[in-house]
Length: 345
Image 1: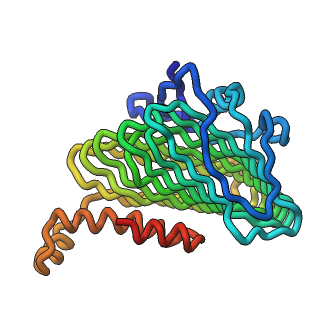
Image 2: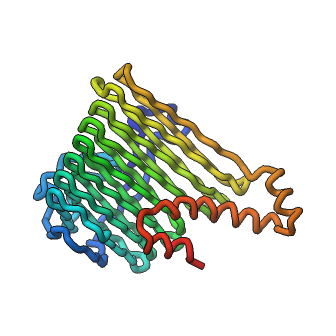
């Protein structure tokens, strides 16, 4: 069946073809296999998100995908961090999909007051279809960091959808790095309910061949003095297509809230197709919202500078592309993951 995901909250002209992303969903989807290494947290396997009171959470991919997830038989890996607990070692989750596998996974992450947790997820392999649904609840003065690294093989198809809420002074830092092949859809819906809650999204990508990357981030500001920052930086090569949707939504009553979204896109070839769709919705006057995008090719001045030093244009392109990914990798708050990415051949 065909499914529309990553819908823009307020549609624009249909002929632009940026209002949503259509994907094919197979009829049979198995439960995905993954390895998990976790310390100092409470882990349990439950039948559904309702078992951990996260069934009403909105997710970035939208209600149709949420319905597919809720009906899927895969169990939910539920993670709970107790009050006043700072988990020092990240939870590490590793996926390695077999060729042409159809598989689904679900995670529920709940942080109680004044707790902290980092989750690092590595996705590899060659799924014909892969789906991942992460729902979170961050309580007062708790802080969740999620790092996702997508390194799929050619002809893979994958949807990663995240959604959750932040209470007073709670924070989510989300880092996503798409460095592999295949068609990937990323999304995150964050409800900044509590006063002074914060959202920080930092994304890097390389899209090549005829692959597609579709991104949809929504920051829903409800609390007073909430803050969201959305940053995306990447490279498009060959005949690749990328769509970025970033929505900052200021709800009535979200006084003194601030939000900012930025994207930096390097276009390497004439055949690429880039869509950047920043959106700010405002029902509250006393807020500050900003957006901007830098889209272009490597300048002739830079090429001349390197060529004058014996570095050919092809190598310059490779260096510039890698630098985009390395910049995001260097900001990952885990030395093990950072070293693996930066020292990779």
